[in-house]
Amino acid sequence: MNDLLEPGMFVKHPGKPEWGLGQVQSVINGKITVNFEQCGKITIDGQNVFLTPIYDIDSEQK
Picture 1 (cartoon, helix red, strand yellow):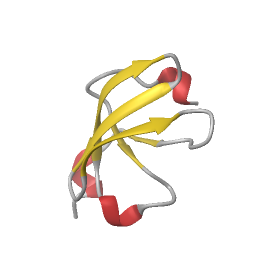
Picture 2 (cartoon, helix red, strand yellow; picture 1 turned 180 degrees about the vertical axis):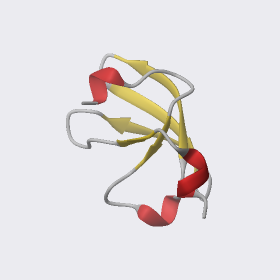
Picture 3 (cartoon, helix red, strand yellow; picture 1 turned 90 degrees about the vertical axis):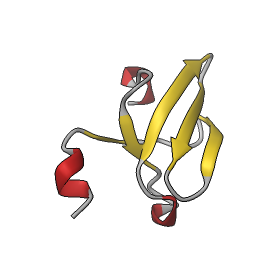
Picture 4 (tube, helix red, strand yellow; picture 1 turned 60 degrees about the vertical axis):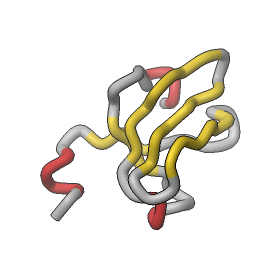
């Protein structure tokens, strides 16, 4: 699923809901850099964590 992620997309980390909404900054060789609302920029190993794409940002922020 992480193969579909592109810079600019919004995601959530399923194991860290307290991080809030994140925006993908880059996807390079399975490493995904995401800027999360509550913890800043994090690089994630896409083989170990499957981020959840968020397509309707308005409903997530309510």
